[in-house]
Length: 253
Image (cartoon, rainbow, N blue to C red):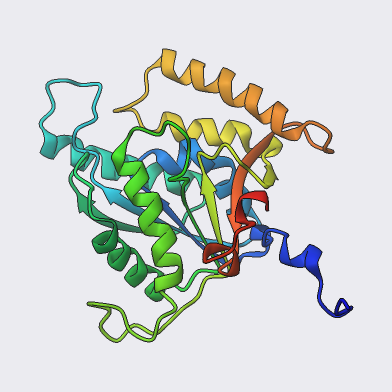
């Protein structure tokens, strides 16, 4: 006999990230948050959420100025990350400064991310979806897997190198750059703001790339908003801690 007090629908529903008072947005490279979830960052910040950025690599291998040294590129990209995040409303910035294209240690990076989670104590964390089909950039795969592991690891009594940080369990993880969104955020009012922030990554963005992104994200935004009462959406796959371990129906949430 079924227990009437047990709400299966609630169990199979994603957490509401828009209720977050504090969020940690984890990006492999200094421009991924803007491209992958810039509209959501702006919506959260405008709702009063304190948004933190955690940038895993220094981006030293990516610059449209081919004469810039890796050291100069890293310096420029850190400044761009702060400028773009600030434009969207982010308040705090954390950097791990791994070399661009060097990530290969999921467990080691998990510990570093978990330490930041325990310090920041966010309600929700965000990262690129490491299970995106055909994702070929290992920095994205490793960052996403490490964030997923840190999502659970941060709630343990102790973590390696955690110092005196206290356990903290975030209530949600949201994956951007996902092909399986279960949450669509209304970004109609902040779509232009997202692109203003992307444009602040001047070392990466030329006019052609920005125009291509605008067309694609405009098309995708309309697709995600179909049947809803807004014009443009941004999609994320959002899971709770329960969904993130030994939960065979996580893919259908």
